[in-house]
Amino acid sequence: MNRRLFLRGIGGAALAVPFLNSLGRSARAQEAPSPRRLVIFYTNNGCLTNRWFPTGIENGDGTVTAASLETAQADGKPRTLAPLAPFAAKLLFPRGLAMPLNGFNNKVDGTEYFDPHDQGMGSKLTCAPLDPTGDHWALSHSLDHEIAQRFNPGTNKVPLVLSVGNAFTNVKGIVSYSAPKTPYAPVTNARTVYSSLTGLFASGSETEADYRVARGESIIDLVSRDLNAYKARKMSGADRKKIDDWLSLLRETEQRVIPSACTAESATALGVTDAALTEAGYPARGGGFPNNEKVYTLGSEMMIRLIALTMMCDNNRSIVLQWPGYVTFKWDGIAHTHDHHGLSHRNGSAAVGGQCVSGVIEQIHEIDRWYAGRFAKLVKTIDSIEEGSGTMLDNSAVMWLPELADGNAHNNNNLPIVIAGSAGGYLKQGVSVNVAGGKLEAGNSEATCSSGAEGENNSGNTGSSGGTVPLNKLYTTLINALGAGTPDWTPVDRFGVSDAVAAGFGGSGPSFTTDGAGKVTDGPGISKPGELDAIKA
Image (cartoon, rainbow, N blue to C red; front, side):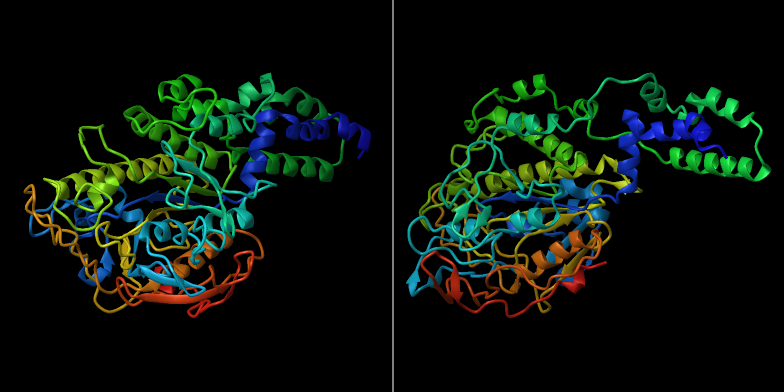
């Protein structure tokens, strides 16, 4: 067969395919497997644990149904996670987990430090002790940076960390660490995130071929004149069969092509536009915003949409959305006069004990339900986007992770954690799994201040017993879940500096020794390596 003639005819048409904007981008996207991602929804001050966990599940093991999330328990108390009922089949509740270094009296170099909020922020994603001097920064990097380093595409190796409203710049406002004693501040301006994505949108003028392919026409149809002229030439039966076979293969491949998702049109469809950003209160410049109604309602909606757009553009596979802990809720029908942190202490202040704020339990429940609605919105948005044979949620793990279990007890055992999505089929769905064994309780968050009367004595809660499997094992499982979607992945068996968990609330924790740079040089280390096999599909 004449090679020059082939290139001038059908071969030329085939070689042109990669240069057609829509078809070339879509073919590359289709060939690549769907990326796996981790999204962390991080809230402060704990919750009413006895209203949070699904009901009707004996000892934390069982099937999660819409009814178990919606139906009030025997005492008639409403459920926190009712907004998640439509997604019950895609939820995983890993029960019985605890943050390493639990308790008030953890020692580093023989020095004790006592603020559980410092520890709940600094140690939660790092599984590392805090520096007992200076600013109390964590002494290792956090999970979000581990994920970004391992799995982010291209040269971008840092996570996308977002905060709604103002973010504290001390240890009580930082959950992400790029290295020991190196806090990673969150982005608070949604416009900053949007600007970073617009450069990734598919660019270039739309050609006639783009226009017609986007509307379902075939690229082969577009060059039909050349094809017919070429096939009319004299050639052997074997050569003609080769051309027909080649056309069949090209047609089959073309039928699998889908439009690229990372476009300005996709952003608009999600509601991410310049006008919407302005309406949500995000100026062209600046990063910090007051904790007001607009930022917490329209602004948080915008952050959720931008997370979805970031995932569609595959610009980051490690995303954190954190919420400040010292906010007074005055929107969406909530009209509080005390900030969330003070309400979590039941007395309206940072003090421990004292007298209860009137109706404080129901006020905390209002906050818990509001956050559940935001998490449900995040899950729904990600689940609404088709990807591969399922949705973007199916290829992701979207985890609600708390700073504390109960905000009054300040405990970090038996943590309320829920994960939506299976990370590409790696995780179980539609179940609650007791990874600790033994008896698990829902906690006694209403042990005090339950009457709703002004002046009731707040004697404090004692948290909940049981549930001391270190979070390290969950994080190891999540790392391997994302790694399973990459070629030649070698599973890891550990994450963090230590998995030592103190036996009880207020008990002494482990001791560590550090070098001059703050690196831990001696401590209990990881004594229980491996994954949580019980939550794997």
